[in-house]
Length: 288
Image 1 (tube, rainbow, N blue to C red):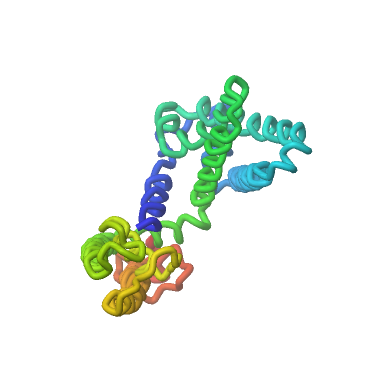
Image 2 (image 1 turned 90 degrees about the horizontal axis):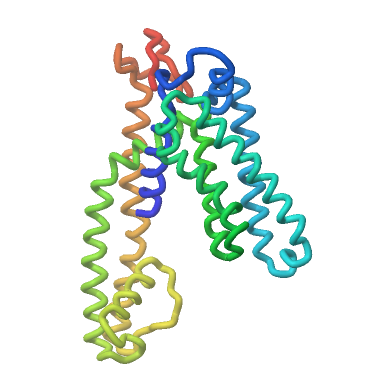
């Protein structure tokens, strides 16, 4: 479920790339547009890769900054580094706004909102020095790594994964529904069998135990004490393997279908195309 939501967000992020009617006709705005928006150009690739490096550096910097001893010792260095990074991101954000025809198209798009959230924490900290709150918002900056999927080399693979997950979502939802019902039933049975003892003080607490057990996490904070409860535990543990096996089988099946469809030309029907092919070897039609 978590992975599907992640790729569902990625699917929408990958769709917001501005269309050609948003490109400035001429002048310096068009040149800037080709750099900050068009990743298939040489300058655009260099810009996106540089941006990715800066995002990763910023994320690592924030993680290190959470160590109290290091934060106190290098407070000024962290501040200046954050100031420099925020300044670069702010300039980039402004350039993206001024070089596009329809500015609202970018500002209110998923990537536009993420870009805004990546620069606002620093300015908030100037007026409200609440470090932990600002750190949480700053960590959202890592979401800008979605921009790498706008690079031409990654678009094909990204859309392939998103399409496979999208087509398998209905089966996964049905499977999750059955799992929820099963977990509630097992939790209720354990509450009755254990008689409210051994940590099974309520049905919600017993459902929590069922989730922990069926996912093979096994914290060990709650464990059955009765023979019947232990037998039920064995059943739940064995069923836990299906949590991984069933969704994996569903998604793998969709991957195979998508792979077959991706290599088949929609124009001439040729299926004898290479895995990395972008155009049909028979008619020259673009495959994806």
